[in-house]
Structure formats: C-alpha cells, structure tokens
Image (cartoon, rainbow, N blue to C red; front, side, top):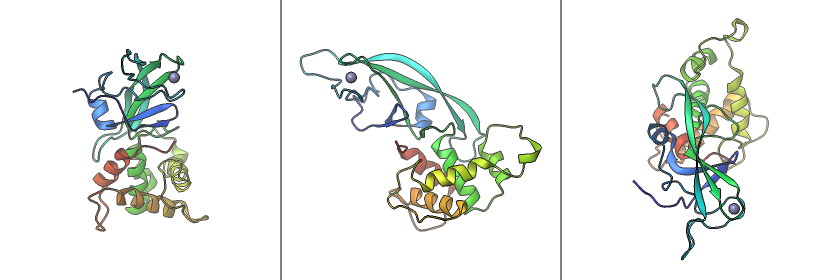
Length: 215
Ligand SMILES: [Zn+2]
C-alpha cells in the first residue's frame, strides 16, 4: 500500500521516525515510496517538486538492533530491524527512516523499556524477574543476578526527558522507582482511550510504540 510521503517526522540519532509503528515494520518493511521523507533533514529540499523528478531517492536498507519483546507476553528477542535509506539529490546527504517506537542511543525498543519500568516501579516486580521478561540475554553474571542496572539508568533518563518528551519537568531528587512510575503513567495518560483505572501492560507497550522518541 502506498501512503505517499511522510509528512510528520522526527529524527532520532540520525533516524527519521515514520508514522509506522515498530510491530508493523518488523512484520514487513514498508516500501520505498511509503516512508520517503517529505523533505531533506539537512538542506530541507522537498522530495516532490512540481514539474521535476523526485528530489530524494531510495538508497537501500541498513540493519539496526532492537532488543526485547515488542508486545506483552512475547519472548524477548534480538531483532534485526531494517532501516530504509534515502539520498538527497540536492546536498547528497543520506537520510535513514525507521519506525516509531525506537529510542535514541538505546538498543532496547521503547515498548520494552517502558514495560520494564512499569513492571519494576508500578507492579513491584524484582529486577531479576523484570530482566527475565524483557532482556533477550539468557546468561547473567552471578554477582548481578539480583540487580539490573539498566532499570536505574532508564529511570533517570526518562526523568530527564531523554527517552520521551515530558509535558512537565519532574522534581529533582526523586528516587529512581518514583521517576519510573511517574513517567510510565504520564506516557499511558496520553493514549486517547486512557482511563484512570489500573495500569495495563498492553497499554504501556501501545503508548511507547505510539510515541516518537525524544530527539
Ligand atoms: Zn539535502
């Protein structure tokens, strides 16, 4: 199915995020016409110019790791995500386009990170149990079996607004699990069908995949 050019995009670590979510993208990489950027991210030249040929051409695919489950209940995996590349004929820069739901400088997918923070900080699961649910790594050093340092790192990153844009800055000095719980609830609250009821993990994945990661 052709969807024309991507009109609203954000750039994450040099990857423009299309409107297509990570689940759909992993099932089938969209065609070159479906996610062609509307403009060059560098020189802003338009892709489509009336009376001219295309200004941004497809330039093949490149692999990027995405770790973790994509939906609730799935086994965590090491996913090979194929990112589409384009070349701007005006300035010759290469533009990479991927799905929503990937985050800058993170190998884990946005849904996996949000789910891990929810399981730990909202549902009160032990870090080792959360890691078993979210991490694709099956072998863990004995000295770190009861801990998972990623949780604390993600909590502080989310508190700083580095993973998802925050509508409001969180107060300084909050403990990691409070930052994590607050950020997960704020993420889910943006869903159109969000209610004030108990948090559901499926909603956490959905909210994270619906977000374009913070640039
Ligand atoms: Zn350009």
